[in-house]
Length: 114
Image 1 (tube, helix red, strand yellow):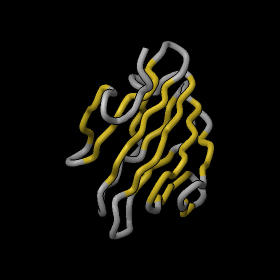
Image 2 (cartoon, one colour; image 1 turned 45 degrees about the vertical axis):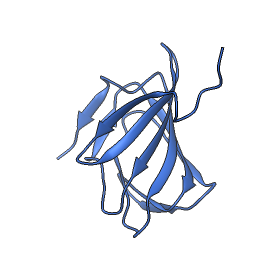
Image 3 (cartoon, one colour; image 1 turned 30 degrees about the vertical axis):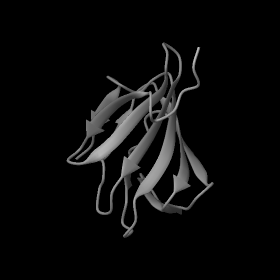
């Protein structure tokens, strides 16, 4: 059994040019490392079941929630419970690298918000 890293994890591209690596992909828990270049963003959405925790490794994340906007720097995180509309974006001029931990996994559990 090998240690998992971006070098050997399942990779995918989301949005126009953002990267994700599945560090853990199980029925009850998902751990993904993502990279968002400057100006990159996800669409506003919520999850019906998944509780997510975002943890910044490098760069600065802007996390838009239903009632607030948070700036998260390296080694800072924030929990987003199910049904809370949110959107993560990179408004800085450097790449953003972060972990998103979801229980249960969030794939197939996303509802877009206008």
